[in-house]
Amino acid sequence: MFQNLGDRLQSVFESLRGRGKLSEAEVKAALREVRVALLEADVNLEVARDFTKRVQEKAVGSDTLMSLNPDQRVVAIVHDELQEILGGQARQPELRSEGNVWLLMGLQGAGKTTTAGKLAYQYKAKGRRPLLVAADTQRPAARDQLEVLAGQVGVPILKVEDGESPATTKRRLDAMLRADFRDLVIVDTAGRLQIDEALMEQLAELSSVMEPTERMLVVDAMTGQQSLPVATSFDERIGVTGLVMSKMDGDARGGAALSAKHVTGKPIYFAGVSERLDGLEPFRPDRIAGRILGMGDMLTLIEKAKALEGEDEDERDLKNLGDFTLQDMLVQMRKLKQMGSFTDILGMIPGANKLIPDGTQVDEGEIGRVEAIISSMTERERTRPKLLDASRRRRIARGSGTSVQDVNRLMKNYEQMRKMMKRMGRRPPKGGRRPGL
Image 1 (cartoon, rainbow, N blue to C red):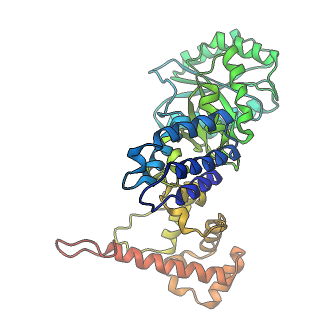
Image 2 (cartoon, rainbow, N blue to C red):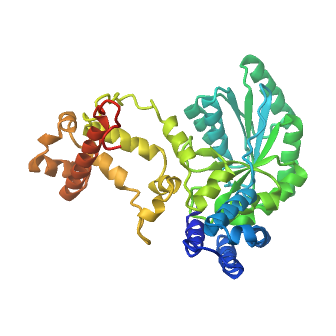
């Protein structure tokens, strides 16, 4: 989402790099470019002005301009201010030992139902016992959709009937909790295409009866900063404790996320990064600021990798790294696919974006082609790649819907990976380091 903004900002700071000192005029000129970049990213005008004003006040000083690395000092100031407008310190919803009720609100299409399933998935993995409440009686099939998600997560669901009063729903919920203890209740509510009095009255009554510990507003990041004034209306009538920014994996410019804290005064708890159940991340302003400025986000990348450890039953322990087969390669490629898109992963690695020539698009379908090619091989061919003569390669290309050139390219990449793994697996000399590392 922030790729265009990040590219613009990094280009601005690249022009300052390598100078022994910076003049006040040079800093001001750079910040004018920064303000233009923020406005083009659909950032609120007042937010953009305040941001560049605070950066200029801190950057235009003798300590910064006369320092040994003034460009780095300016980037550090911009990073801190970006973190501040994104919300400062990361915030998460209140979570008690029991009795947690989270009410999800928002306009129709913002992603409330999907977010409810993602929250249940995430907190079940953390040891909680979630219960989903399907209280959206307005949108057709909304309750059925949440029921499917509940089945996928493996948690119970309470479906509100048409015309059922909030008081009746509360009684049914209490009876269900007495029979089956649950310490986190997530309520999916109805939305509208736009705010109206009927919607607010229904939500106000439901909130009053349910007495939620958190009232989260789900905001569609794809609609930009124009979606943020909605938060004011919900907050005035219902009370909003935090935001969930959905569809952060889209190609929107990022203005909603960068303007949300200033416009609404509420912290962003979570960011939806994919349609999958595991596609919900805690919103961490410091890490997002780092990604925007090309500093990467290795902590999130490491967390994603650790979350996938041990998930594949067919993954074997490679004690001898030199015994790296095509099956092992397939397992690793599938894990990479689970971690997200190539573009997202590269954005988390410091400096990785500079390895790709300007204007070059990352081929997101490459993992799919590799998976198709290896899946078209027999088990014997995967473990003994030397068997792959010209005839077998033609058969594999036909079976995978690719070309012989694609198969040859895969085999060349595999050989390079195998040699690298073999070097890493050699026993180092006594008192020495592993060769190749």
